[in-house]
Length: 142
Image (cartoon, rainbow, N blue to C red; front, side, top):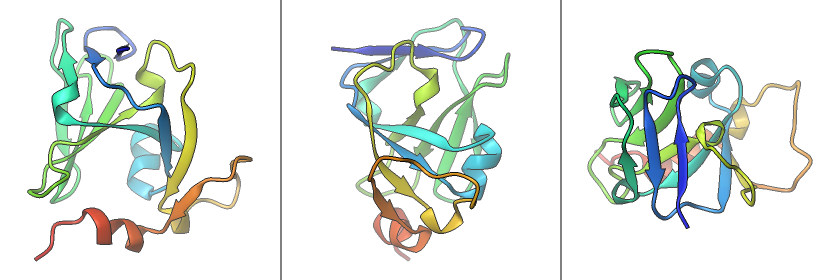
């Protein structure tokens, strides 16, 4: 089964050939500023994504090891992608809200739990990681 999605105006459309059934929440300051709240991301391999809209997404290098994709027409946040060399290079985290259909996707994890604002929490029990724990897994080693 594939999943499809787009930006708000529909100029950037995509298809995920092997979509995940789980989503993770990121509480980091950058994701909150970029998405306007909690970023709910679906981890997707680079080879599973096809962009097929009238426009290609634009990207912004938000760190030395990742970039964020958005629509140049409507400004919608679309994805976060790891650019640093290593086993996770090219991996996407597509925003859950960009999908046309979100049925059957379960929240299973939260990252940067140490940066989560006090004003909210999820009812479901999830796997939680601090920023330091996440960087130990994904950041390129020097």
